[in-house]
Image (cartoon, rainbow, N blue to C red; front, side, top):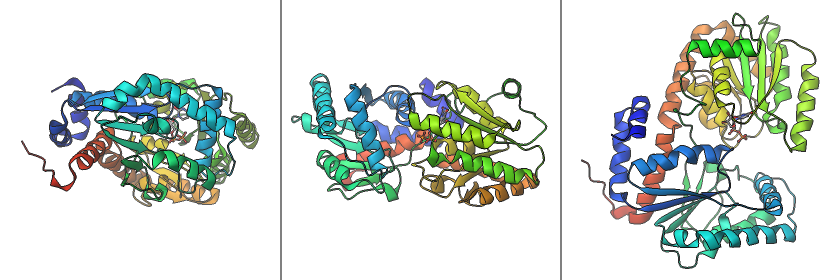
Length: 413
Ligand code: UDP
């Protein structure tokens, strides 16, 4: 068996791989192209990084193309991202022109490949106009939305809808995000890659090294939230929860791990608020990690007793999946994609306030038996629902469905 498939079989079981091979057999040689706007950074790139080679191993000729833009283009698409998530900010016509112009330029290069592909997956709004720029396309085109589009800013959605309506289908991560469109809509949740640096098993020595590096005491309990310094992730609420829980759990340590403040002015502001809330408490560590610190994050997640993701709004929450996969119960905000992953009382607890989070932290740390039991369920839940292999299976099923509709029969070997 090819190398990657064999490695995944070890994690998910041979049945899952056999199922993928059965689905892929009639699609062999088919040309599939994925298009997004970045090769590195962000969940979409992380997913495509492995999804593309894996589908190639299954015999489907899969490519990954990245469109490139200019400053105005990225300003426009950032505003679109915010607008889809509900920010009510109009986008200037000049930026929309830049958006369309960049797509026109990219289409010049990509057109031959896209027009002859059997299947094209366009990820998020950035490359959405490409379909309209490939008039001689012969394949099926699918728009894949990774964003929480449950309450988009209406004028923006009316504009984007013009680009998206002509697609053959669209995919959203949760039913609540789906929009009214004149074509079939599919719900496919994102996934993590169990064999990536972020998720691969680590030995105890590596966890010890990370504890030493960040001066974490192995003999005292540790809770962790990994996330960008963003108000929707509620890092200040996590500090509040830590403070409340510590009254009952002396010595409780908290790590807030996030990216280094870049050009995001709001990120800087939130980081200041977080630093202020933490004061000079030696048991709260605020870590600014480089974007490629995947193994460090992996080790921190494994070294903690509980993973927290106290967001007040969350598209999916890959950090939740990552925590669950490491056998940790997750205490998560009762919102968006966290609700899909944190099954209350089974894989973790859903909370709405710092007080609620503190109560659950205290409960779990006093009931180690429950923590172990929930952690085991958490890992199993991710194994069954949120790994890359499930994600690819659903893409293949969608391809088969769109190509052959109800007449199709899979021939079992
Ligand atoms: N992440 C990271 N470094 C950081 C903060 C986050 O590598 O400093 C990773 C995190 O492990 C996860 C992803 O970035 O894989 C964040 O995805 P999520 O869906 O949780 O949130 P988003 O940032 O997309 O809102």
